Length: 143
Image (cartoon, rainbow, N blue to C red):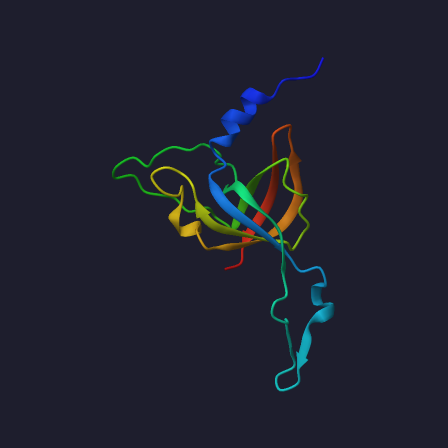
């Protein structure tokens, strides 16, 4: 007898309201070019290739609940730049150093956190957890 997860999928689908893009630099630093003027390695443009795009969510670690702010309440920022990306299990497995970009939001009333739209995150730990309906990866803000 198979376990029916359709109910869980419907509940989780409500939090997957960020339009995400995942990019990967398959060559890593091997295709970077040395700038002889200053000794720095320069990445060729374009350096990253698209891997996946679809609905997911990027949120601070340990705060998966979606609650509206209370009038007059102060927001405490997370103590680090660590966030988690919640992806559907159908999304491909990510690798460390993949880049996740929040391209927009389909959330009625606007994005959960408007400051995240347009931001880029580096996958720091691609194996936080995979469940029957979602995959969690740890990401860090890079821009």
